[in-house]
Length: 137
Image (cartoon, rainbow, N blue to C red; front, side, top):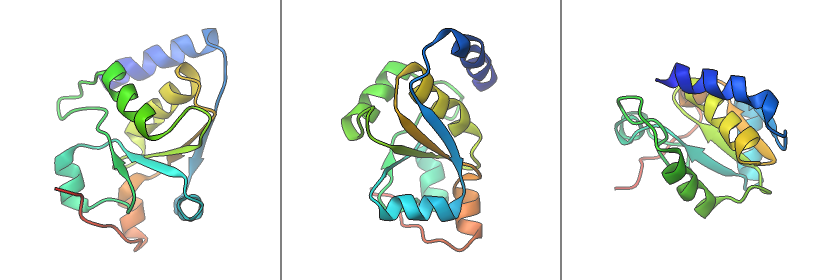
């Protein structure tokens, strides 16, 4: 299912006006942006958040459920409540795979001007001994 979504986005991208800059970042850049107050959204599922913890300050907004399903309008409504298209935003998942397509969605389709994709996700963040906190609830 995710591959179909990514393929569709890639096929449609040349037809859509480009408004955004989607930038892959590593942990050093992630830490710098967090210190600047850039909004971070963790798109993983609740069990994943509980398993690893989250980057402090993350907004927890699941994109793909455990079956790979998604609801773009519902997800975008939640995102718009925490960050506007003219503000920078960071997306993080487990390894950076899911956020690749979702970053494109925000940037190309929804006109978010600057979207940062955490290249290797929370796994690399933790491996590099960066702090995580327990998710709320």
